[in-house]
Every structure is written in C-alpha cells, then in structure tokens.
Length: 508
Image 1 (tube, rainbow, N blue to C red):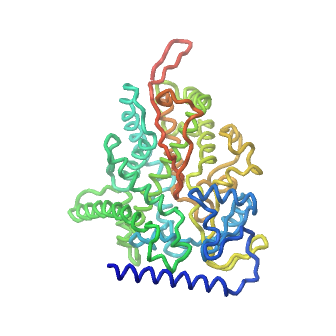
Image 2 (image 1 turned 180 degrees about the vertical axis):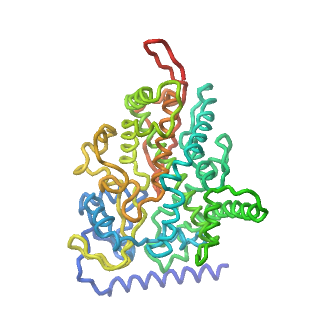
Image 3 (image 1 turned 90 degrees about the horizontal axis):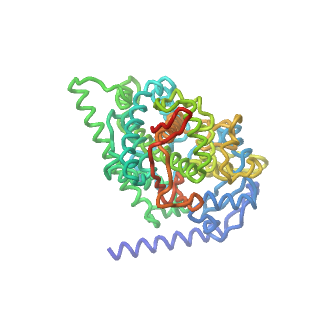
C-alpha cells in the first residue's frame, strides 16, 4: 500500500513539473481573449474564486467587464455577466455555445454521457428533449395532472395542520421538497416516495443536495484533467455514494414495473410506462440506461430546484410582512374564504406571480447556468474564444445588475406589475431557468408547483418567524452548489387564518 501511495505522489509531482515546463515554454496565441485578471503561474486565477463563485465572479466582472476570461489551472473559462452578453451566447450564437462542459464530479455516475443535462446537442440529445417536451411537459399533459397536484396540495395542508395547532415551527424546505418529490414520483412511478412526517424526506433531500453540491463545487480535477484520477478533493468519492443510492432506488422501481407488465397487470400509463414503451419502438436505441438516467435527471432537477425556489420565496415574504399581507389580500379577493386554491386561480393572481418573479430574480435557482462549451472557435464582440472553452453565464450577477435593475438588491415585487419581464428565456436580464435550446425543460411544471404551493399555504395559514425572531435577523446566507440553497433552513410557524370582515369573523 505504501509503495502505491509513493508511486501516486511521484506521478503527481511529475505532472506538476510537466505543467510548469508547458507554462514556461508555451507558444502564446496572438488572438485576443476577453480581458481578465492576471493569474499566478500554473494555478492561474483559482485563488480568486472562493466558495461562492457566483459572488466572486460578479465582483471580478465589476472590474474587468461583462465578458471576461480567467485561467483556472490550464483551463480557460469565459464568464458572461450582463444581459447583452447572455443574449449573444444563449440566442445570437446559441449553436456555437450549445455544447456542455462536463464537470469531473458528474462522470462518476454510470452512463452519465446519456444524460440530457450533460449531452452536447446531437441526435441523442434532441430525441431526449423531444420525449420530455411531448410526453412530460406539454400543456395538455400538465393540465391532465391537475387533479394529482391538487391532491398533493390537500396532503400538504393536512401535514401542516398539526403544526398550526401545536404552534410548532415547520421546516419549510423539507415540507416543499417532500411535496414536490412525491409529485414527481407519482408522475413517473404512480407512488409516493417519502413521508413528510418521517426522516425519509430529509434523507432523500440530503442525497440530492450532495449531488448538487459536489457537481457545482470548484474542483481541481477540472482545472488539471491529467491529475483527475487522484481525486484530490475527494469529490468523486462523496458524490458516487449519492448517485449509487438514487440509481438503486430507480432500478427497483423499473424491475417491479417490468414484472407487472409481464404478468399482464393493468397499465399505470405514467411516465415510466411511456419510457418503457419507447424502448420497444422499432429502430430506437433507447434502452434501460436512458430510462434510468432520464428519471435520475428528473428527480435531481425537479425536487431540489422547486423546493429551493419555494423556500427563498417564503423567506422573503417573512422578511417583508407587508408584502405577505398584500398577497393574502389578493387571495381573499380572488378566491374567498370558503374555496380551496386551484390552478385556474393562478392567472388571476398577478401580485403572487410578481412575488415569485422577484424571489427568482434575487435568488436564481441555478446561479451559474450549467456550464456551456464552445463547439468551434467563436468570435464574440471582437474577442476570440477557442473551441472547447468552458463558458459560464452568471445569472445571479445579471439579475442584480444595477445598469438593468433599479435598486437591484431590494425585494420589490411591484417592479414586475405591468411589466413584460418573464423567466421563460426571452428577457436576458432575467434568466433563472436559462434560455435558448438549453433552457430548463421542466420550467412549466416547476412554475406551476411553486405558485400552487405558495398560494395554498398563504391562503390557508398565517405565518410567523419562531421564538420572537425579527424579520431583519433572518439568516440569508447561501451555500453554493449547482443550486443556491439557504445555509440555515427556514423555520416558520403556521396558524389558522382569522379575517375580520363587515359581516363578522371568519377562521379558515
């Protein structure tokens, strides 16, 4: 064992020497990269990033401009930090920038190269995208599942009821995550996956968060690919545990469904049945590997991002009680005390929609859009970007750009009232779900779920912070991963709403 450890370190030192020699005697490229900070020998700008890259990159952009380049080890990374640059990359030259840079951490997942999230555009990616767009996220399909979402909302409210009676605080993120996870599970497998009242919801949330955390974490293996086998940060070891856990779970569901299909049992007609049917189509190379990876993507992206958005939105409302009261007043006027919230009510709630938009602006679900990669040499705004360069779009910096937004760090939902600004990828100052051909395919479902959960919880309950906590003392620190989660989970105390009207007092 000692011999192999010594051999590994000798190999590592030789690689470092190789890098140093390459750096000292490299032939400079005369073509002009975007401006950026001068880095140190070998490591480049690695020390400038820190544990919150979205913030440090935003700070560097203030100095070097909305399009800049950094040297991360021996890798060149181009960063866009303005609406104009985002439009150039995600729309004007979408084809050239549509590739994916795949973080080393992701490659530990079995068959990662089949994931729609990480595939570069091509026949395989287009087929997967088409399958999701035609079978999962069409308006007709989502409308058909309204009854399921309403059922999950009823279960959500029932889960909150005991807390309102006891005065105990609710873990808002865990509650939202369990609800969204069960919705995804019912859509895919026709079963609930977790019970909010048990530890299973938090355990599964931890599994998904570890994947999000390590997939988004700066990794020396991405900067020095030749030494990635050493896994110096231990990222591959940590993330593999979570991927394996998730894959075993999905494998079990697939095995059970294959057995029931062979036995002649009635079809569920859920997403798993659709995928298994697709496997049997003539001429299709779509097989079980694709099924498992696609469902893995749905669980990871669907559960974490929606729950995170919901938690940030509730956090901002608890920090701004007057805004919460405006939302609840709108709900009373549109829905009334006797009715339950349904999806048909959402288009009639412009202030609620403005609140969600403002929360997404301040806390974009994915602060650095999944890394793009140039498919060829590209000229952009007079600068040269070589083929296979990693390109980051800093959605967090763009949504807080003072040149684009008035008082960008303030929570002001009113800015969206009467505004055409939308999160569907056409307004490049506001791209929490991305834009262009790589826009998040699950956007339609995520938006419906966030609005429906928020409206249901605010309509049925009043909410306050625990232990006399004041709004201005709520912890707003975030931990960075692929998504941006609150470091300290939000706890809030629900209570049955009491409304005084001209004809008396109503509790609901």
